[in-house]
Image 1 (cartoon, rainbow, N blue to C red):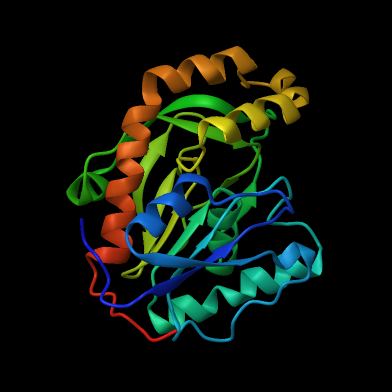
Image 2: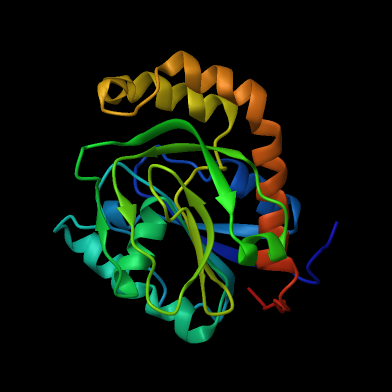
Length: 241
């Protein structure tokens, strides 16, 4: 296991009061990082620079990246900070869609209303396979997807929503699926999101929980490799807190 020479902070951007960084947070702490948790939707500001952070992770939420709320606009514009400073940046679901919007992409749902809520297959591209092995099934909970921004590299694709993961520049990544869910988080999502299981292409809650037993170990292992790659293998230098 790699270790940082000094404690480093990773900026964690969440979008609801009870949201958690889940296994992403657990993995980063195990690798020697501290978590700087901000919730812009609840009035928290975002730092003007990441000079005192090792990078940032922007998580998902029930809102749309196209919503008119001020925090959506400010958060989307803020992504210029890690991009300009070449800091590791990971956008998950909503976070990936905000990153796509920031880079000139487009976020929208399918014309037939189809969603990805449950377990769906993905396939790594040649560029994605060059980084590491990818899981064949991943967990989704979204009704919109993102277009591939100009100059971005597609890393994984899917049937319902073709753009599942991309890299922009050296250290910015967007992924449409969720690898961060703990068992408790998935149970909460299944309970509180049950009204969405009737949407086109959505899976019933029982399928969510059954799929976890089958595919989650591979997804969890992928997440650990990915975070190792993003935060530990690209020359992130320790900074004083």
